[in-house]
Length: 173
Image 1 (cartoon, rainbow, N blue to C red):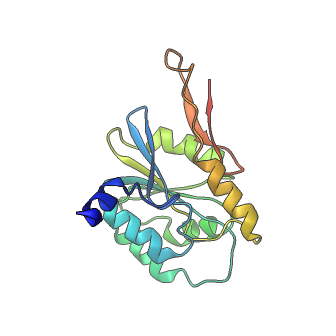
Image 2: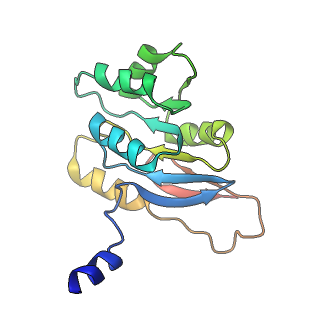
Image 3: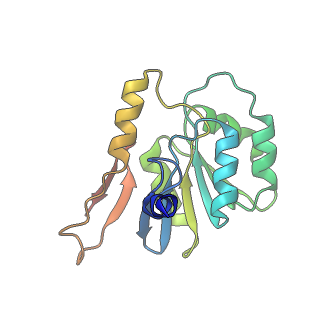
């Protein structure tokens, strides 16, 4: 009985397939802590309805060929890469059938593109498959900031929620 209560109260792990919210009919998930390709693949398989994937980060010299093949075969329609690894992966998968491949200069640009291309009723997943910072404490602070979302006062106005280049989430009117 105690175990069941604990499971019912468990809200998940921060930044691991964390539902940010649904905006303009698109559901956004934050999986920033997925810094290896296999973690991204697991998130995509678990969520099932991913139409757009935003990925990329610091180049640690990993071999991404298996991940590239996974993306080519996946049901993900829109692939948005950010520097540096995301751009390299985009170069390898560009031209794959049924894939729209985009290179974004930063997360702000990537999320703007996601709003343009993600089908309503589907998911946009931020799951980098790469580290973002060399310094761990800066990364953790970025992840904490990425959870913050303030909706009060914006309900009657047109708004766009997006990740700014620092990785935090904000609402712009």
